[in-house]
Image (cartoon, rainbow, N blue to C red; front, side):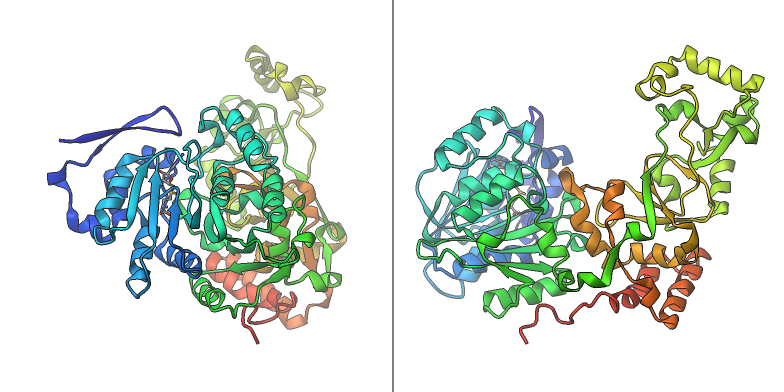
Length: 564
Ligand SMILES: C[S@@+](CC[C@H](N)C(=O)[O-])C[C@H]1O[C@@H](n2cnc3c(N)ncnc32)[C@H](O)[C@@H]1O
């Protein structure tokens, strides 16, 4: 057996990959190198080196875009199994002089798969090197790149590397800059005059603090032609848990100062295919077309994409705080101690008056409606679904339970030692609707039918008491696709596509005027909620029935990308 042992640039792990020549399934290798490589390689290695592969239709679009300037030389600095090189070869077969490609990767195993999978295209140089540290100087006519997205603290001597970049490229990148942005900055600096670059990267930099310097750099150097956001609901890399965008770059000294940056957004595979075809034949109508001077690098750029459609109609919407308030859930200071199962309650001799029904983990309320029956299930399955709630007069059982807490030093924890008395939790009423604090894709708003309390895993939304008749409408709207569009730019982006909402962000969510909705529309929404509650509609079908109703109040122009 030939085992190739590879040392990771990303961490100090060692992996063994069995690539004994006799054992290679050559057919599988050539038919689908990505799938083949995934099968033979430990997941830990793929994850550490961020070996996620560009879907063929995306790779094809990116390659076609750079080939438009007839490059003689192309660089792929993170080549992986070589999808971009294969696309160059396939498209080139249709005619034209074959450009020479430099395919670089830090991992010799994966580069070997790339090389073996494309024996027909001779004009490729495969080089095993760390792109961020290699001394590549020669300019290229084109760059196509899907850089690695691993955590920046995996990069050795990151601080020195960033300082070196700033000196060399005149950038002001911070130490927190993600690795994929370092790839971007170095690669655009290797572009020859007249050259083009296409990069598929996480859209995180558009909202992150470290992204400000990256955005400024691209704008100052007039590099950015277009950004195409691949909607988070049609994630390009399902395994990588990240939302993506494609940056179309050109280095053109004759580009006018005010040459606009075009913003596009594709919502699914069909939309993407249509949009790409239009971008390539220059008939696409962007969501927005902005001069570099009116794109503010200090702003969260998701705003330009997710509120663009309705920006002109903002007078038709009002923030959620006009109807409701939002507050974070109850922080106990020690969930392990302050939450109990039915068995623990009984064993402690605590009465039902000394605890409160409470959802303690977001997984306990995994659907859109949480009913009394759901609570009963948690209780009978002995899940932790009670919050300790000592009253004014402590019973002997409660005294025993509190004494145990003191023996365990629960009263000395950060929250409890600042609370008087240490064991009394915050007083809250059950919220009307809960919302998940962290989310990917879209947040989940849960109708609290069981009227129980919630810990910090959810924020609670409390409707103004005089508006309680709007509870179902508000709940349905918050889960609608129209609302998701408003929420996205309000959210704070964490690594890996993880998003967070603070209570203030929730209070700023824009709502259409429910009072102006027609009677039949209100009835249709209430009917859909009733069916969902009874389990006669699943989440997908529920959204399908309410989305068109709210869309009517969102002023969505139809055919947003069509030129007419
Ligand atoms: C996201 S994958 C992209 C692979 C391929 N280009 C594609 O689009 O399918 C990133 C690639 O970068 C490689 N890589 C990771 N760190 C690198 C580094 N410092 N220098 C060069 N390549 C690196 C990984 O081994 C991986 O193959």
